[in-house]
Image 1 (cartoon, rainbow, N blue to C red):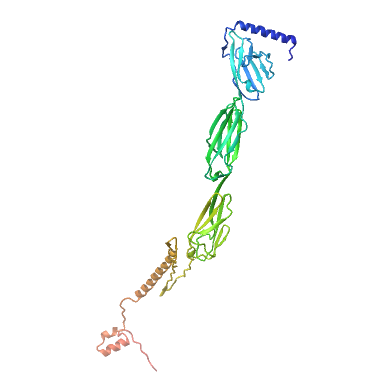
Image 2 (cartoon, rainbow, N blue to C red):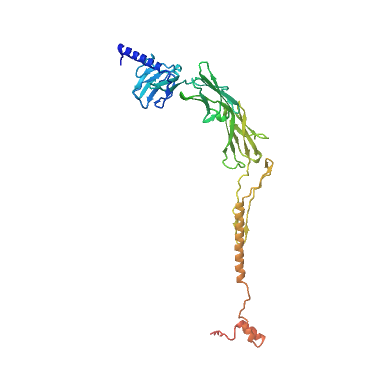
Length: 428
């Protein structure tokens, strides 16, 4: 609403008379009352601050707002101060609310809400201006690292108010830094944090984050990814055979090597001996045909790069070739049992003798067959002797017992029994 010239003059005269009345009661110091309240304000530089003066129980007394220099900003709904950044937001009998736009550091201080009573009542609102830091700057002493080495990083947050706090994260793990705070000539703060740690091969490609904590900003950080070089990781894989290595079979080994920088070449060797002359080496592959026990020993794959050298070992032990056991035969009169044992050659591995190869299952089967055959034979013989055992009696000489003389006894013995009926034959 526009104010006319006469209205403006009347307002000025009212303020002059009001100030004169205050001078009369200058001896009365203002008091802090719970009836008049306000709030402290924190605002980021360049943004807007809201100052609110509130009266709980007003008896038609006048409310005004003063700046830190105790100049009147608003008297009721009138703004005597010629600063257009102050604007009236709300005015009533119980509140005077004013906005301050584009806040700067010079606006920081204690503002006064004043209620004209006898004595005057005052409440104080402290405006704190927050200045966010500039973009964090992260620096590393070493761009490329080797595993096991120590490195150092620094992170700087410049020109902030209040001083910022710096945290360090390596991946998802927080690391402690050593902060240093400096107050600059313009009453700003510069914070530098120094981080020292030792890297491993697992740190390659891991981000290191410098996180800035400040009331004026959120999610303010800078990142740097680690580049860590490490010596090769070597592993030998058995491609063939899938089980035991036996005489006459073939052997195929593959050497896998991974490192940073990547090893360009791998070497095969036999510890304390030479690799068999007919062995074929192709890159990381080792191929040996027609194995025999003279090839026993430790085979080593070696890989190297600019950081160092690593190796992996494979111990070769050649077993005897598998044998065939003939099926045992059994009869009631003759038992033939054949048991084959494979004699292990007296070759040794690492100074130890080679154990004999014995198939215990075959031996157990043959013994069972032999025992069964013997039991069968004993049963047959037992039945035979049982049938022919004891004293046998006949009635052929029974007629000789009643004979009068020897001739008659012979005749009776040959002719049969006297008591039996004689067969009579008649010839015509």
